[in-house]
Length: 225
Image (cartoon, rainbow, N blue to C red; front, side, top):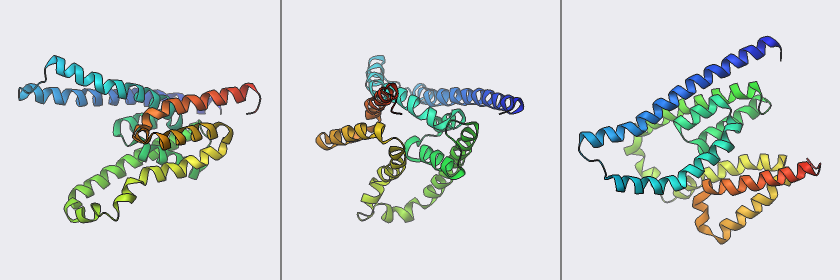
């Protein structure tokens, strides 16, 4: 990479972070401010004790999950795609698969400038397509309701995300089987013997990711990576 390209990339990243921080701040203010606004408007504010109790229950789950998702997903997506992803949502079921597949199709190296740009474009496209699909779904919700509620199709809808991540995960498991095999076995056995853990996959990312990092560190120290 020559000096001109480095300068362009630095300017690009600077602008991405400036715009991303601004949009995140605006999004948080709107998400938090609108419920308070209507609460004051209609005199429906909860008591301080009830509000604190509700926040404590939610924070105990979502703060560790948010930290884990940030540490795991940002290196996969890059700066621009991460800002878009955490603002628009659908992180695991849409944005990450879209970014990974786009990079594979284009053939760019992970953690490169090209990967950053491709991920950002793919996530932005995914967000626009999602909004278009939601708009169409709102218009067609009544005629499509018998199809969406069909007991025949219900199992397929319930397993879209596991099937999607199974296909994507296999490629990464095959790239580093020494690192992947033990966390995969441990998490599989945990979900088999403790079925309630299946609904807590976001929380399980923390021990699974930590175990994978530990195994990778040990293998690196032993010169096996």
